[in-house]
Image (tube, rainbow, N blue to C red; front, side):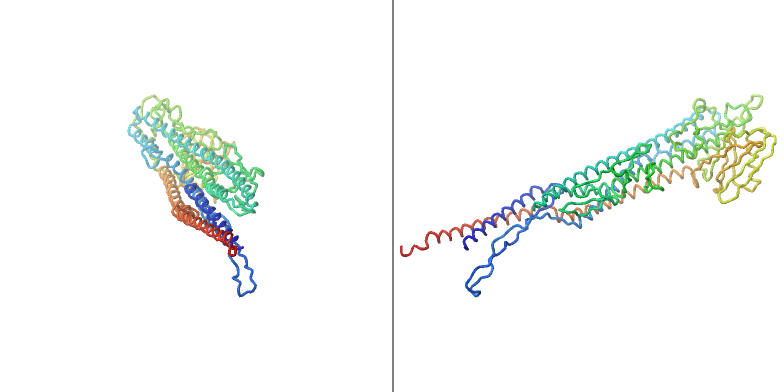
Length: 600
């Protein structure tokens, strides 16, 4: 009996150490495999048996029956895994955000000698030069060319931001497709793992593959992971299951009229709650879509959308203020007593210019000025008398006023009203509208004026007589232009000319409280600060994730030195078990061959 158990003990020892050596070899072979977790053979003593005896005093009690392997365990720290994936989501967000802001910094290109600010400075400088040489043809040509260069720069920067927005939008679709692929693979692995668990085996390598996919998913989007039956995992995004055991819910996108993707659930078409990861960074940088499910106000930072709005605001401010001053001047081709009443830059033809979204895209110098720079209204007074003789040649006061726009604070609102006849003998009535104040009715009685500029001055005098300060009224053809340093001023309405009612005005909001130069400096500085913040947060997050990964590797990683030590240990144990079986075999041989020989 004891000989039988002796052989069994030796056999078990050989098989167990052989299996342990196989585990060591598997670890060493996968020491460089991404996501591989060290496996350990858990050796436990086999169930002992009680020895029979005639009395308890002669019983030795329970005798051991050798060794068995209870399991080949995968070394993982679930707590560190959760920490790693949580921080990996933030890492993905800041990495994608930094990449987006790096591209924006290249587009802004400030400070530099080739950026928008430098081009704007050159534009204002050309007006200064023209004020000193108002009749010089080459100087006039430079003004037109600087205007075209400014328009080209605005157009180019606008298109670059649009292209970046399209790239971010494409990244949204790519991220959604990648999430679906990972979710499908995790679901498939769940099925395989559950089947192996049901058969009583340990699917260690499959679990490693699944963990790698979950790590990749955590960088793309915010996920919540819970354990399911038979060692399957369940994954949620925004409170809804992405993977539920052997099933998964697919994500999809819906496009708005501009082709921008909104992330939705494929089955319900309900918007998906994305709060982290690379996907959220793309949405933050790109901005929301125009679809009805989007929140108002936007939950995203709207980085590119805000830059486009700021670029349009700056272009609108430069265009409208330049046109306002230019229209009051006299060109070399103007032989009348009236100002030219012409724009330097093209104005949008829309009836709601303040809502116009393409000031930067459509910015262009008027064709009449491009073709003939003599149409630039540099003079503040007429340059030809009624007899056709030159007067006031050398007058560059209007050009000087245009150059002064560089330092204009832009803290006003411009109101454009089209189609109002400014005949000399017409009476005009309208209301000045200010936020928080009752409307002030202004009435101008008929009088004789030689120019529309005089008529506009009479309107301004009437406004000041009503106790309203800080207003400037100019005339551009049949268009009245009101500007005011009063921030409560919101518009003009109830306009009548000789009792005939005309449509209300349209308000154009300028960049307020600063010069155009200061405004763009602030925009560029804000981008720089955000880029530095993203770079700093990315570096900090990368360090944190690396530390957590090192902590994971200290538990899960394969050390070749440790494996070599275990290999020697199990090899010696295997050799000892083999020697033990030889000894037991010799004992049995002695019993069989030599016992019972006496007396033969």
